[in-house]
Image (cartoon, rainbow, N blue to C red):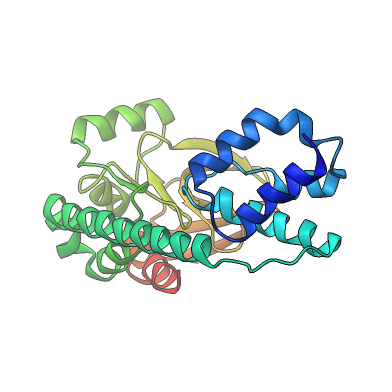
Length: 249
């Protein structure tokens, strides 16, 4: 490998004559020969990145090639081919994500009609933000709830019980987690609470808490080590606090 051979390849890359496959193959074959010819910054900018999109690696390498050619004063005409192919690929990816999201929303409505009846504002807001990675579990049974109460030595308030009889748990990537099986004890400032789930209202990992003998939902901001009364009960949590949060995210 010499500078003339490298320059010819950089021109092919800058002017759009490479494919993702040809560029990756050439790089893998000659990578060790390129390090003595380029400084570290040039080498890293030219190196094709690992990426889920086919055209991103050759597009980023093209930018590195253009910088090297401009520095050397070599004349060339930059091609927009890689940028155009990347945008087509990105559009296709976004459309597929929308299709998957629509299917997820349709499945949610079909599998949880009673959730929509009891908590319409929350369910409507949730259906709009559902991501393919999000999860809405099927209903919990009275026996499962009773088993969890025995494990925790904690009696769920009536409204929390009603919620879990409609779904055993919800996990939304924007920061709402309610889980029967994930509940656990937590002592804060000398008081015992049961963790209902997470609500990232102020920071990731902030928790929703239940206090023995109360319907009240408490909020624990862990970074500030502050415990706050959030709302009167489960219905207010879902229909007002969480519905508003999901609509804003």
